[in-house]
Amino acid sequence: MNRRRLLAVTILVAALAATSCARHVVAERALADSLGDRDWTVEREPVAVPPAPQGSSDVVERLRAIEALHADGLLDDAEYEEKRREILEEL
Amino acid sequence: MDRSVASLAAVLASLLGVGCAFSDVPLTLPHPTDYELAGGRQREIVVASPFRDGRTIQDRCGMQKNGYNMDTADAVCETDPTLWIAKVLADGLSRAGFRVVEESSRPSALRTEGELLMLFVEPVIGFWSGSLEADLEVHLRLTSATGLVAERTFYAKGWKGGQMFSTRTPFQTALSRATEKLVKDMVSAIVELLDRYPSLGRAAPPRVVVAGR
Image (tube, rainbow over all chains, first blue to last red):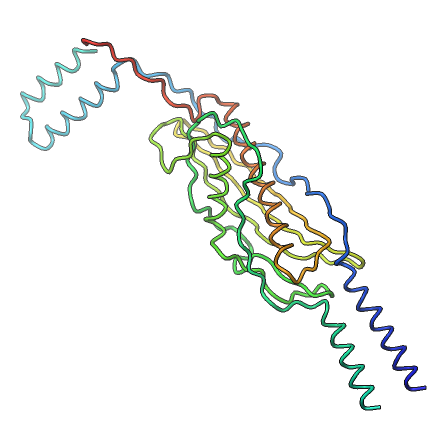
């Protein structure tokens, strides 16, 4: 009698364990759809940058260069003014 | 009788142990390459790396569970996920034809900053079935020196079912699928945003030098 009860309990536990393992036999599912934002939140739009006039960036760079030389003492005031005038005349 | 009880205990222990997994799962963060993207058209873009780490759970990248849906072990990322996600996006943009640079002095260049909000892989146990699920969530903020400020959150889920969850493979598969979906979504969205503002990311026209001047 006791052996029968033991057998019954063993079968019951085996069935429960098999149920817990049934998760291993599942069909492949498709990938989920994206759940993120549907669109961008644009807080600020870019401004259009007009194309620089031909040669103007060179002028700016050269003005900055002589300004730096002047600040470092490599050009005196007269030389700086002369160079500056020459560069601006090119515009 | 004693032998019967001992045998029964052994059977019970082995049966109950089937659904348990006590070992940590190491996760190799994937770099998916099996996808097609386009639309970059050599536009210049900066991807700031690493992304910020906005994950609620930062000490692990997922969990292992037993058959009773109980957390029994960690899934641990082998590399820094904030560096990884920035690299995955940069690679995706390159594959789509963007010119990805570290820094740019061009006012039209687009700068991308991101925040990793979620990276978690775990078994989802049902009564009769289960699956491995990977969740990825990233927030992107795109700016340009010309004034653009745009933000968007991306979410992707990768599934893998029909496997024993005590092995590493289904964790990797679920994460790879989520990553591929996420990078496709992010790159496609960036292409779409830049197409709205054609000046963004474009190289300046070459300057014409006239001889003798």
